[in-house]
Image (cartoon, rainbow, N blue to C red; front, side, top):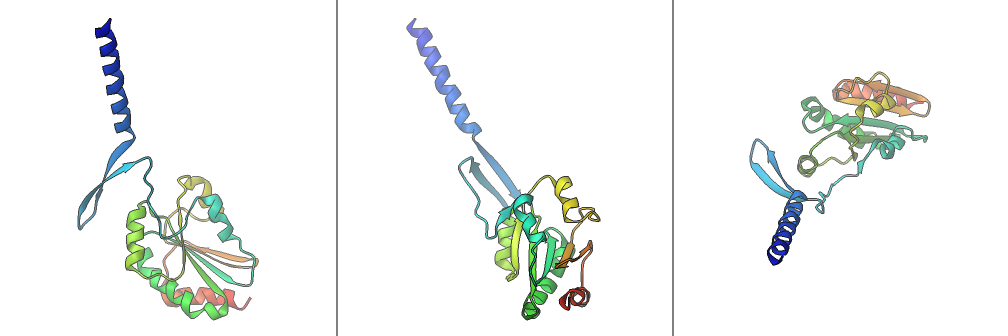
Length: 184
């Protein structure tokens, strides 16, 4: 009987140990410059330099009813045309702030660590949020029925006027579109 009890206790200890292992996983991140392994457990959270929102928390940014012109740009660090046009949005944010222009940069990145690294390297002064909602098929048409989901994409709106753009901008093109909204 003691042998059976011993075997039973030993089996319980082994099963408890394997349950502890199942709460941890190893994630490999492969970048061009290095390979990093990070042990992640269910208790570890990654801090973000910007607010991380689902679409329900983000949606209010698409419908602000005030006297400002709102420029909402959807982008990601892995999108070369998006990164190329970011300085134009930054310039517009700075140069037109006295004309009540508000720029919001909405990151659609998947890798929060990479996004935080990008933000630390590039000084983006515009307001920023990370839209982290996996149900793109539900929220993309709520941004615009015209949006296929490709980025870069931009919404410019003021009061009752709204325009959606699924393309990248030069600074001159962005300023031209913006001027259609400033004098409303």
